[in-house]
Image (cartoon, rainbow, N blue to C red):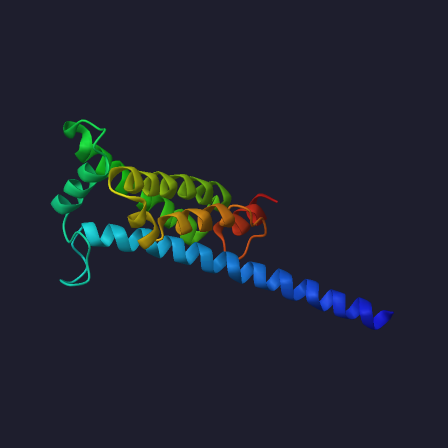
Length: 159
């Protein structure tokens, strides 16, 4: 009986440890995906490794994916999307309000996926795994334990 309890305790500890590593991996994966996309549209990736390569190409792509917006506001839409991606990436990476920014990331990515699907075809959303990234962000928002997060440190300072 005591051995069974020991095994259960060990499994519980392993599950908790795996959840912490899974949460950390999701934070890093989503953050780097956002930052890589931003680096692409700002021209930081070398030739042959980018989708847009510069801001103008990204704004043109934004217009193509959002034909329902007036052309005059597309640069603002592109800027807001980029600013949100940078903000969300930084917050997820450092672990600031992780659950909130994970949900917001999930919604933003879902908007991107639907824009791609409705403006061209759903295959683009699948090929670029935008629905998958959105689901990963929503899954991340469900993890409550803090691990290597600014929120954990801030909660210790308050307490």
